[in-house]
Length: 414
Image (cartoon, rainbow, N blue to C red; front, side, top):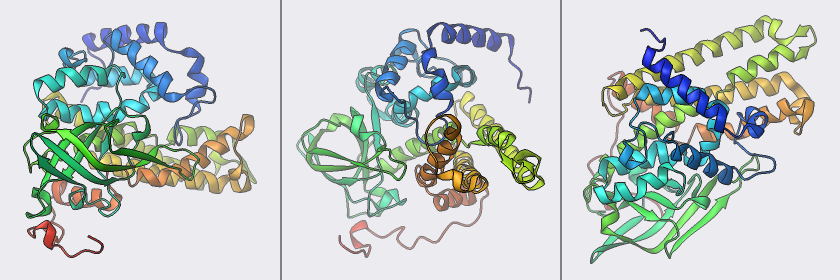
C-alpha cells in the first residue's frame, strides 16, 4: 500500500493545518504535551469546559465528527480524512476526551438504530459538545459478561421502568445522556432478553456516585436506577434485540480505545535518552535497547493494523473483531512500559510534581491508571476469546449457559 497523501488528501491536510494553527488554544500546548500518560488533567482549568469550547469551535467550522453526515453535525468526510485530521490536531485532540464515548460509541449506535427524529435531535448536539454521552453497560455482578446483566426494564404503557445498577461508567458525573442496555425478558437465554435504550441522565431516579481511583482521579462512576421512566421512543432496535445492537457499540468501543490509547512509546524513548544509569545513558544499555526495539515494533504493528480498519470503513463495512487486537496489545504495552520505567527509576519513581520530577510523575500516573485499560472495553481474556474465535477461526469457548433461560442460570444473590 502507498501511504502518501493523494493531491486531494494533501490539500485537505493543508486546510486542516491552517485552521488548527489559527484557532487552537496554543496556551495549553505545553501542558497537553506532558499529559499523554495516565488520565488527562489540566492544572488550572476544567478539562470538560475547555473541551466543550474547543469542540464547539470545531463544530461551528465543520471540523467535528468529520465522518458523520452533514445533517447529523458532521462533515461527510472520508475515513482517511478523519485520520488526517487527528494527525494534524495532535495534542489538542486530548481536549476531546469527554466526548470520545459519545462520538466513538454512542453516536454510531444511535445513527444505526435510532429514528430519524432522534438522529436529527441528538447527534448534532453530541457532535458540537453541547451534550455529553456515556455508556451504561458494565454491572457489578456481570463483569465482562455483558449479557449477564441484571438491570431490568419493564414495559408499562408507552414507557419502560428501569431498576438496577451499572458500574465503571466513564464520565457519568458530567454526562447529559447515556446509552443503556437492560434485561426485558428473563425467561429466554441471556443474550436474547436484552433491549437497548438511551436516557436523560438527569431523569428522576438516576443517581451517580463517583469512584475515586488509585491515581487520584474520579473518571469512573457507579450509576443507580430506581423506577427510572424511559419513553419507548428512546428504544434502539427491537425489543429483545439489544445484544445485536450492543455489538455495534462494542466494536466501535474497541476501535476507539485501541486507536486513541497512548502506549507511552515516544515518552519512553525520550526518557531513556536522558536517564543516567550506573554505566551511562539508559538508551545505550543493550537490555534497554532490546525492550525499546520490541515496543517500537509493536507500536508500528498497531498503526498498520489500524489501517486495515480504516480500509474496511472506507468500503462502508462495520468495524470487525480485528479491532480487539489493537485494544489488547495497547493495554498490555501501556502497563509494561510504565512498569519498566518505574523499575529504571528506582526510588525516584515515587516522585510527582514539576520540573525534573514531571517525567517520574507521568509514569507513576500511567502505571496506576493502566490496569483500567485492560478492563475497559473488554478484559484481556474476553478479547483473546474474540480474536481466537472470530479472527483465527478456532473452536469456540465452552458456554454451558448459552441456551439456558436467564432466570434458570444458577447464581448467588439473585
